[in-house]
Structure formats: C-alpha cells, structure tokens
Length: 449
Ligand code: TRP
Image 1 (cartoon, helix red, strand yellow):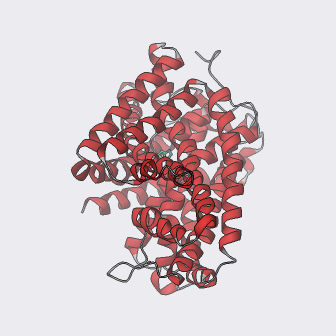
Image 2 (cartoon, rainbow, N blue to C red):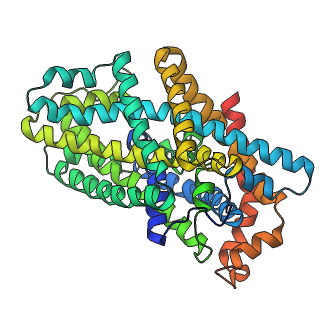
Image 3 (spheres, rainbow, N blue to C red):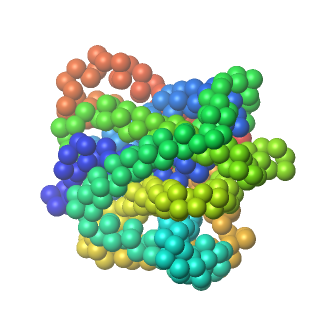
C-alpha cells in the first residue's frame, strides 16, 4: 500500500493544497460580515486567538497522525488503537468522518454550482445570450442540478488525476490565481466612493461586542469549518507529506494563510457593501444587521455590479471566478477523504473510486436539490454543527489519550531531533489532551441545548 501511495512533490505544493482546502466559500461567505457585525477589529483579534489556540492544535493532530500512518483516515485512527475496543472506536470515528465529509460536499457542491453559474452568466450576457444568462442565475431545479453536476465532474476529474498530478497541480495553479484576483479586486474597490466607510466598519474595534459566549462559540465553529477540521481532510493530506518536512511550521503556515485570506476578504467585502449602499443598494436586513451569506453574495453584489456597466461585468466575472476557484480547491480535499479510503481498503483504482464516491455524493446533492426547503439547511446543520465538533472531539481524544506518547514523539523527531525541548512539545500535547476536548465538548453541549 505505502509503496504506490501518492505524495506531494514539494513543500510549497502541499501548502497550496492544504491552504486551498482551508480557503473556501466559508472565508468569503461568512467571515467578513461576521467580523463587521461583531466588533470589527476586536472580533478579528478573538478569531485569531481562537484559530491559533484551538483550531491549530487540532489541525496539527490531523497532520501528525496522517503523516505517521501514511494511510487513509480509517486506517490511521484504527492504526493507533491500543486494543480491540479502541480499534472499533477508531474505525467508527474514521467512517463517521467519511460520512460527514460526504454530507459537507453534498451541500458545498450545490453552492459551488451557483458560483459557477454566476461566473458564466456575466460574459454570456455581454455577448447577447441573456436568456442563457438568466437561466444560469435563476433558482430553478434543473439549473441547480446541472450546475452542481458540472461542478462535481470538475472535482472528480481532478481527484482522478491523483495527489501530485491532480490535487497538487491544480491547487498550485488555482491558489496563486485566487490570491492575485482577491488583492486586485480589493485594491480596485478601495478606490470607489463609499469604500472607506466600509473599511471603518470592518476595522474599528468595538470590544463591547466580543464578550458574548454565543459569539465566541460561533467564531470557533467558523474556525473549525474554515480549517477543514474533524472529518479527516487534513489527516489525509497530511498522509501525503514527506517524512522530511517539519510539520509544526508548515501547519502554522497553512493556518496563517487561511486566516490571512479571510481577513483579506474583509478588505473586499465590507468596502464593496458600502460602495453598493452609496449607489442605493440595500445592505441592511429589516433587523438592521448587515446582510450576509447567500443574500450578500447572490443579491447585494449582483445589484451592485449591475450599476457599474462594463466594469461591473469584469468585476463580477472576476469575483465569481474567485468563489468558484475557492470552492474547487476545497471540494477536491473533501472528495479525497472517501477516495483515499476506498482505494486503500478495497484496492480499487483511483479513477473508479473517484467516479463512484463522487457519483454517490452528487446523488446526495441531487436529493437535497429535489427537496431543497427541508434538506439543505438540515444537512448543513447536521454536518457542521454536530458532526464536525463531535469528530474533532474524538480525534483529540485519540491523538491525546490513545496514541502512545513515545511513537508520537518519535514521529515528530523524524525531522526535528530536538523537538522534545521545544515550545511545541511543551504546549501542544497538553492542548490536545485537555484544553481542546473540554472546549469542544462545551461547544457541542451548547449546540445541543
Ligand atoms: N474549509 C473550507 C471552507 O472554508 C471547506 C472545507 C473543505 C471543509 N474541507 C472541509 C469544511 C472539511 C469542513 C470539513 O470553505
């Protein structure tokens, strides 16, 4: 098995791939408006602390465990078990992770399909195909099904290519494109009337808002979603890292890029919203809060672009391409979780596994589309509010308590002989054993009551 497993070709390739997984719709969809509505720079500070104090240790748990076993998530978790009971629990946790990953991809693929539709609609409208453009942006069942199907095919095609030729190659192409597009868009928008008001709303700290426990909990939830934690994504990516790499520092780089892009997205989204307000677009909901999430992306922004003529078409196309790219580098990382398992457990070819797993998940998306009202929100809640924290908890317990300390230390010593004397080893094990499980348990409990 280990001999013909894929491996990332370079450190940078891994960083692009893992950051590509982390940077997704979550960063642009939710983070900027959440920050602006909840204390601006004060919220950024809280988010940064949470990301590094709580999400980063869990990210490291996944990366180290993956790299140690060089196997899929089920093999990894059952591989560190100490006896029959922990083996069963480990296997169960890995399988549950695969299920939750599939659920996440099933709703993610639908939203990503919308992004694809908007990307194509603007240029089509320009060349006169306005009925096609309208079809692509109208909320109908056939359109939702077809766009989701196309997006899933793109995801499957990349995963069929393998770790180096598929995941690494495409992430290394798409991530720089995403970063450049984001910076260029923000730089342009900042020159427009109204942008500075948005920047002020985004950055002026208001410490009175950040002490609500509800807020801290939801910030932590977003940090977990944003870093792709719990379901085995980072574990599987970690399993393709070479033993020569120093994990604590590349993990930190991935977390930094993810948080950095979320913060950078705020420099685009908030100014854009206030530019829109300047032009008469409604940016507040009836309750006075900033519009966010789907309304922001699918209503506010298109209304703004419509006021801008040709420039608006270019901006819109760039913006929705950015969203599609962000979604694609994330969706491949989710599909890799079941595919790695099937390939290694049942000895299937990667191509067959990608088509079958991707096809099954696409049918789940299809079912959601057919009963959108009832299923869409339910699948999101089930997978991200309950599934992810529960899995994160089990993961910490496994890495912190079940895994033999000596083998764990030996794994880290592979490329850092003095790791035992360093800061990471002094702090991190305590975190995965005590701090993370307790805090995740509190979040989980709060989300139940
Ligand atoms: N992190 C991605 C985002 O911010 C989505 C994502 C990719 C994800 N892989 C995941 C979320 C695994 C949860 C679990 O959009």
